Image (cartoon, rainbow, N blue to C red; front, side, top):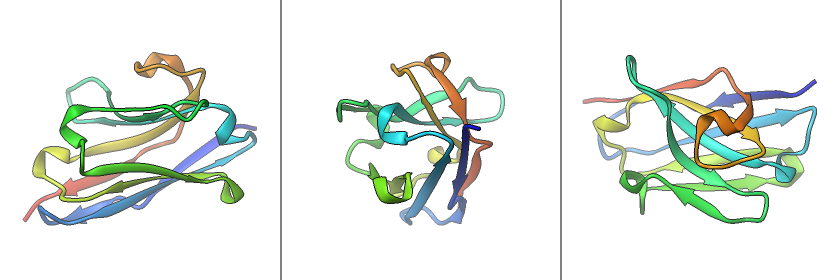
Amino acid sequence: QVHLVESGGGLVQPGGSLRLSCAASGFTLDDYYIGWFRQDPGKPVGVVYIRGSDGSTAYEDSVKGRFTLSRDNAKNTVYLQMNNLKPEDTAVYYCAAGSGGLYPEEYEHWGPGTQVTVSS
């Protein structure tokens, strides 16, 4: 059974860092497109960072130079390192896996999400 679980969210002050983890079971993450998405209340889900099965990456402009996606194949886990966090980064963060692309509807498997709150 395909399963994704995020962890690592929490409350952090502006300028701080968090590392989100996304552990997969039932399939091999490296065979799929992996996406990190986020959603503010009342807003649609938006892309944060994408890694293609071919190693290509894409990310939302506001996270350039601050967020990095990495993976540990042995643990079947991907990470989103988030540095210099800003209040506007506050959202529920989701990891997803699927056939890929830049849009949430192109991802078949989703975790339940983890809350990130950036506030002083």
